[in-house]
Length: 284
Ligand SMILES: *[C@@H]1O[C@H](CO)[C@@H](O)[C@H](O)[C@H]1NC(C)=O
Ligand SMILES: *[C@@H]1O[C@H](CO)[C@@H](O)[C@H](O)[C@H]1NC(C)=O
Ligand SMILES: *[C@@H]1O[C@H](CO)[C@@H](O)[C@H](O)[C@H]1NC(C)=O
Ligand SMILES: *[C@@H]1O[C@H](CO)[C@@H](O)[C@H](O)[C@H]1NC(C)=O
Ligand SMILES: *[C@@H]1O[C@H](CO)[C@@H](O)[C@H](O)[C@H]1NC(C)=O
Ligand SMILES: *[C@@H]1O[C@H](CO)[C@@H](O)[C@H](O)[C@H]1NC(C)=O
Ligand SMILES: *[C@@H]1O[C@H](CO)[C@@H](O)[C@H](O)[C@H]1NC(C)=O
Image: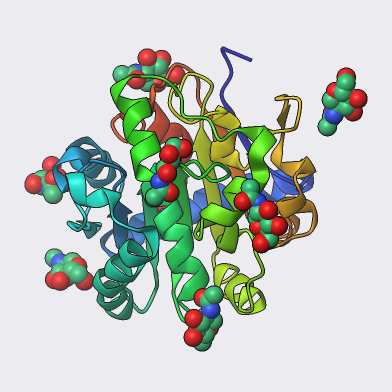
């Protein structure tokens, strides 16, 4: 599986390639004219990070999309990032909502690691959000890792594993991902799906050399089956039953998987190749 970079739009054939090519010069001209009006970008950090860790990413955005207003939300830094997920969702939401309201044309999210789960919580529970692209940067979307478990894996450089034989325990104990995935009854799931589907693009970034997210395909909604074989997103119940909109996004051509090799977990936000391959084009 090594040595590849994919950037695939799930569920959509390349049938309109010709038209797209014709449109590129025109689009380019529009982009140039609109250079001062790129949508604001909001960055949500991961476990133990703080806003200072995103200097490189801010520089990449400034170089490729000059004038973009980039905000790295400076909340739940470092040790505070271990606080309960719903509490963090509410905190980040309160900080992010005014930025959305200030931007009639909408905003983009780049959410790293645990931040990708927090952003999912926000997108599911905020009825009038205006997020265009949600870039999920190596987030354990299908394997909840509570703070202490992820802490151990980061410190001891060992992947955290959600024991696939004890799915029950996960379902009962995680009030977060289980609720977002409707693995536990959620009276608001229809509402949450509607909210989530206000998104224009969902971009799932990950890769085989991550080292922390296990299996790495969890960054793209894959997970182990009972035999610890990785089952890809398109064969997961959460996708097949379209629980919160993955399948709908795919049918719309708005679900993008971007896989890049040779990137360890702590480098996703600072790797320029990752930026150019997986993020740049979705920030217009
Ligand atoms: C963005 O780039 C411009 C031009 O190189 C530079 O003057 C400015 O300080 C940069 N802004 C940020 C936030 O990096
Ligand atoms: C960037 O966005 C923030 C949050 O909406 C706002 O307070 C700030 O004034 C903006 N900066 C510029 C230069 O537009
Ligand atoms: C977090 O996960 C660890 C290891 O799986 C477990 O022992 C601990 O009880 C969990 N803590 C919470 C608050 O769920
Ligand atoms: C999970 O909850 C269900 C229903 O409340 C219960 O029957 C089951 O024993 C629980 N499983 C574990 C591992 O706690
Ligand atoms: C569902 O929505 C209602 C009304 O907004 C809220 O009070 C309740 O806490 C929500 N339930 C869950 C499980 O989030
Ligand atoms: C797991 O392996 C066993 C024995 O080879 C097989 O019977 C079973 O169908 C497998 N389960 C899955 C989900 O592939
Ligand atoms: C960045 O990604 C590229 C592409 O896979 C890789 O070759 C390079 O080693 C990476 N650099 C770092 C510091 O992660």
